[in-house]
Length: 177
Image 1 (cartoon, rainbow, N blue to C red):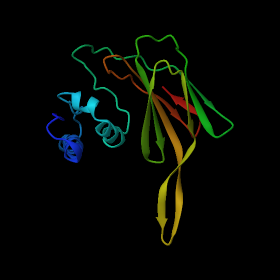
Image 2: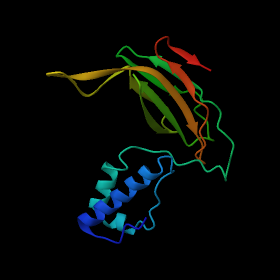
Image 3: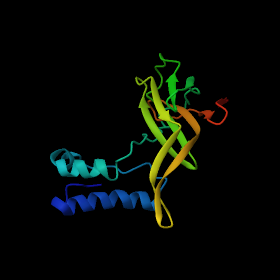
C-alpha cells in the first residue's frame, strides 16, 4: 500500500480505508504491507490514527512456514487463583530460548480476547470477571459483567509458529492436557 500519494485528511482516510478494505475482502489475509514507511515516520497525525484505529490491538506476525515448520512445545504454566478475584499466569520454563512470545487467550462468557506477551514477561494477571459496555435492559442501562470461563496459553516462536494450547478451565481449576 502506498501511503505517500495524498496529504492531510485525504491521506488519513485513504490509508485507513485501504487497510479496512483489505480486511473486509479477505478476512483471513495475513495483513497489509506498507510500500514505504517514510510518510508514516514523517506524520505524527498518521501515526496516531493508525495506532488508535486499525492497529489498536496487538497482532501476531503470520507464521513463516517456508522458513520453519517446527511447532513449539506446549507451554509449561502455573495458574494461581489470587484472593483479589484474579488469576496469576506464570511461565515455568523461564529459560525457554526458542520462543519469542506467548499468548494468553481468555474466554469471558462467549467472548475471546488475547494478550500477547514477550518471552521476557514471565507472568500476567487476569481478572475472573470483567465489566463491559452497557447493556440496554428496557429503560434501565446497567453494566454487563462477564465471567472468565477458560484460559488458553500458547507459545510463538521467532517464525510465528504457534504451539498447541495449554487449556485451563476456570470452573473447576483444571488444566486440560
